[in-house]
Image 1 (tube, rainbow, N blue to C red):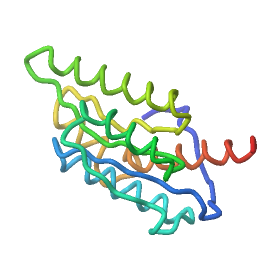
Image 2: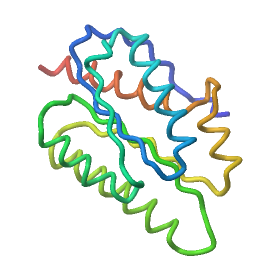
Image 3: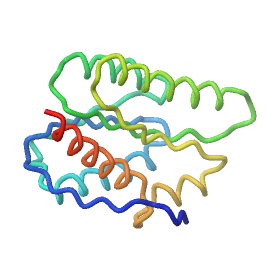
Length: 157
């Protein structure tokens, strides 16, 4: 457990709009993170109608879907969930590195914040810990980070 983990307690005015993308690969972990993110957003005051759900085949395809969503200008933030589990080949590194690079490139190119909830795990046990039904669930953490950044953006306008 990290000792420097921040605590976020953001209450939304309900105006922010979110896109949540979850990957079909390793969906059992992604579904848990998505569920935790939805709970965190709703309990912070985001109405259900302000949250749109999308699916990506896998993590490698996330950046292009993020780009399409960001360019639509319908969302204040995009949250991505995926799980990449190390295998016996170099494919793990390619998918992990390129999906993260692509997501950041889209965020910087469109000024729409995109939150990377992609787990990169050595095994399924690590994924179960990070996506399980517990307070360490990364879905909740990513959603709370999105709320915190949007609150900071509101200070700029």
